[in-house]
Image (tube, rainbow, N blue to C red):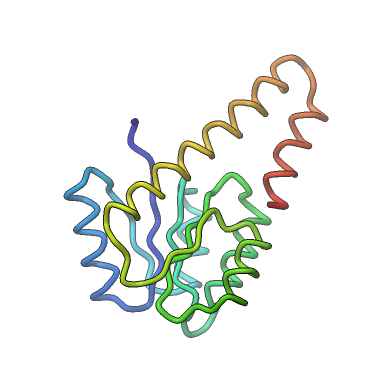
Length: 151
């Protein structure tokens, strides 16, 4: 599978840097943001393919980052990775369009598999929309991307 851009967002600096190093050992090179504000700035500067997002952070929390990213960048797949989640949080994250909801501590193989699945989903959605756009069916292409945005 080709290389894809991952943004890891977590206010626990030691945790997120260690996780990023472990991903790099498995040929995934993530960027790191240590707050919701920093994540939104990074996305604006360089849109990732997949974002791994903690929920509980000071300032702009993960749920708000998810809302903003899904609205402005519907093509970004968001994987929630939290140590303080609940069934209610999971339901809300999925309603807002999160691709997956994982609990800390996470098995590395499961995380990598989820990241690759999220990237594959992004590619498939983008390719279908592009095919319709190429045929001049811009309304259908927009509907596909809007439907993706709403998921």
